[in-house]
Image 1: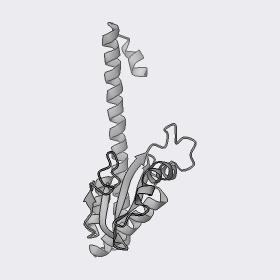
Image 2 (image 1 turned 45 degrees about the vertical axis):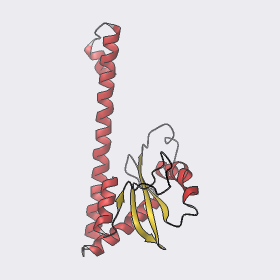
Image 3 (image 1 turned 90 degrees about the horizontal axis):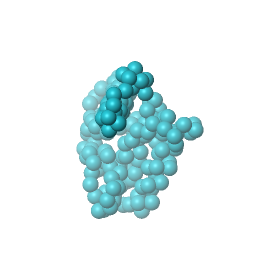
Image 4 (image 1 turned 30 degrees about the horizontal axis):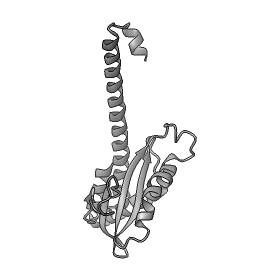
Length: 178
């Protein structure tokens, strides 16, 4: 998702930087610039934090809009105070839910990026946007499928380790039903 957002910004001639270091100084574990656009507004750059949150995890099941909650309580809660007085960057988020919803802030940023891109490439805006929204959707679905596959493989590996440690072999149907 991050790479595709970066590609859209490149299409717009915005010279994006992936994983820009040092936006918040030398703070460990604080990398808000998944995609950073050096010049965005009032002489400041835009540090975009790109994320995907599961719509069905325990903290999101009761939420009406998991991507909005994740944006507010995770991303903005973590970074807003650091960007409040920043003269060099503003902070923004693009957060998807696993079922495809996107936070309103992220949608607004993507719409702006796509407008820059379609103008810069001299393409019909609706055609460019349609292709990019489709690509974003496909990339999201593909990545979620990969995560499910990885977790399934890890579970199979864990079952095998459990069998080996127990010293016995379980009925194949029982293992398959887990």
